[in-house]
Amino acid sequence: MKYRLMDVLACPECKHFPLELLVLSERELEGMRAPEGFRCELYCGLNRAFLKELRQEPDCGRCFAHEVVEGVLYCPGCGRWYPIIDEIPRLLPDRVREAQMKKDELAFLRKHADELPDKITRGGKPYNLGEG
Image (cartoon, rainbow, N blue to C red):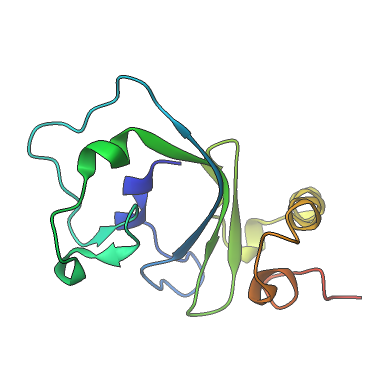
């Protein structure tokens, strides 16, 4: 997932913006450069801060040169979590997260249980490892 997507992603359930990004692994992309004059509008995903709160200009070049391979998007508004698997954020509303997806996402939680906070592994919605 590109860090710059954090400027436009919101929770599909409660519409909270911004989401929290927890990076489990990332990769560097060789030869990627930010287009001339590019800058996120409101929120810098790489610095995890609103642009108006940053003390210096964001490093958009570094942002374009890195992407999240595995991670979690967490909504502080409603407590839902959304995995990022193979660079793809699975940002779907609860009604679309079907039985197979639940199985895959719980396996993802188990795999990364030691790397993620309890608010996700034990208390996250729509399901978590704390459920029977």
